[in-house]
Length: 269
Ligand code: F3S
Image 1 (cartoon, rainbow, N blue to C red):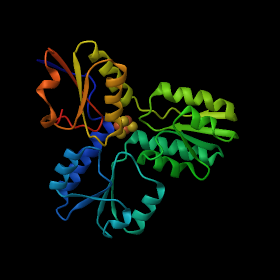
Image 2: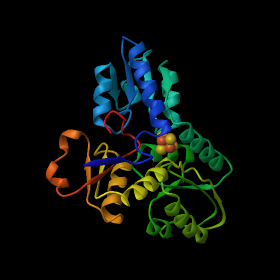
Image 3: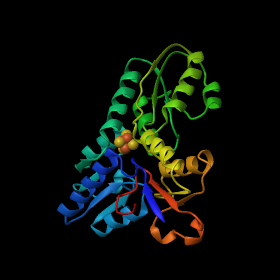
Image 4: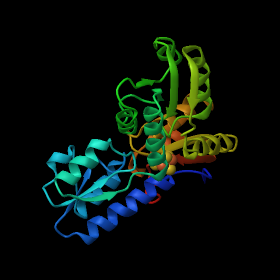
């Protein structure tokens, strides 16, 4: 069986940077360091970091005063920075620079008096943080129906969760035109997701089946898998580790494609 790996697969720049910072932080602080939420949506890597001393807490108030806390690439709301300062925590900020830029643009919209609309998944930590920067009155939309249900406002400012696809964003922005006299739109989308999708489309032309590697709790890996399964017309499997592979899945096939979400480390691929 020949195995081809997609040109763009696995860690994006922001996740790679956050993981490097997490390993360095764990190795250089023998008394322990905590991350606010799991550093990435990949259970194998989170376990490896735990073995090196990186704990996980759900709230900034669970970090012992004076110790170190790591902010993951998704970013956090402004009140987390304020609370960290109050508790005199050492802050290791691994927020992806592109996510930080989206925070600043969102803040600027709110400061200029726009009603902020965020296109993204309402429960995703990145979107929850963006909502906090967007101030009261911000709305999160994910579908055309969500946009149609919005109340109109004279001035609407729009940003997207960084992992949205440009075509989907453009469609919703088009719908938003009917909701405001003035619409200000920032393209806060990072192309890492699109690059992975394009690479898998190219790969699909060459292989009999595709294996998508990554956390079952990773939204971008799951989306990649759904796209392979539903849109590319190929047998597709979503696995976290090689132990899950079953030879019978690939009976009679000669070429297998492998791709991975942005939170999957190279050593697992
Ligand atoms: Fe950053 Fe893009 Fe990854 S925004 S965390 S490089 S998907």
